[in-house]
Image (cartoon, rainbow, N blue to C red; front, side, top):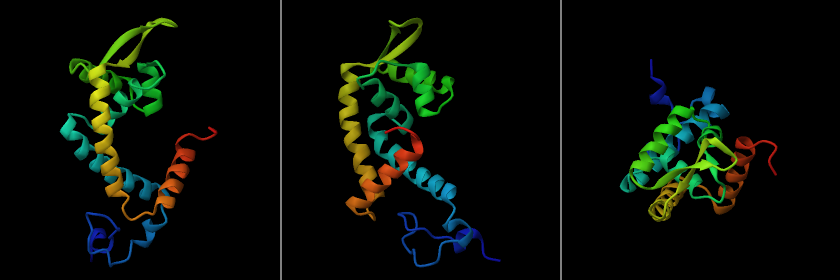
Length: 163
């Protein structure tokens, strides 16, 4: 009996001989395809960001901390769909590196907002270029219009009911 990996080949960097058919039970399974695409994206992103001492999750926290909103740790956890303890660990790591700082939230003194430092913004700028490069390499098989369409569809799934 042939294993699933003997029958399943997807068009990706890890399957250059993609001449065999995709496993029929999974070829139309949106959850599987999203999970596999996510795994490939995370691997590419983590690899690209590692030269900056970041991973996709820490990069995401740093990017949000550098944004215009003064985001609390609780809001970071909700937005990133992470357990609050994971966000605390990520914020701690970035703070030790001097890339972010915590400040009391003026609206709620019991909460902290997370703000990128100047060093954090500088790291973010070069890391963002690396992340975009990895994303372009992963999506090389898509046209510009398809990338725009994919982005819009994923945005609609990730943020239902938002504009």
